[in-house]
Length: 208
Image (spheres, rainbow, N blue to C red):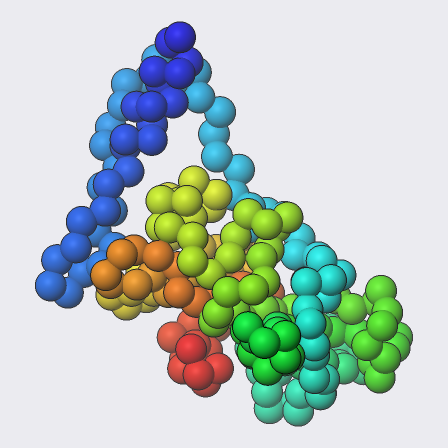
């Protein structure tokens, strides 16, 4: 019974309130040490790898291309042949036609760069700007609430502007745009980047 009460206390520890200029005014209230000790620490999903095959299995269609060297300046240097593939992720519309572009996926492959049906793609970056694709076994997708996001990624983040937050784990960053009206995730970008990149410049360059 105590554990249930403690979980309810933790759930109520997060509250979001809107001001004129601040969408993400998130308060975390202090709770005493005895309660903290009974609740496992949140392990951020960002510590997990993103499965390219899982993403491909959710698609209804895809277009493929390669990125130029100038388009890869923010990504980690793979040293070898530097084949960065770019996939446009397509879902069917209400009429069953594959016309709904929900995002983009960037991969690296120095083995089979010209083949789509393969298992050698290495994840580099994904951008989702519409519903239809989920990540981390269905845990994260466009449309989830800010509270759900914090439960999955923790509350250690940086605000880039009034409605964009970023979580960081070594060379991996996860960007989330939050709606002003109802505090829902409206856009996602997760990628593996070079050290000390200008995150705002990167987002602007990628038409975030």
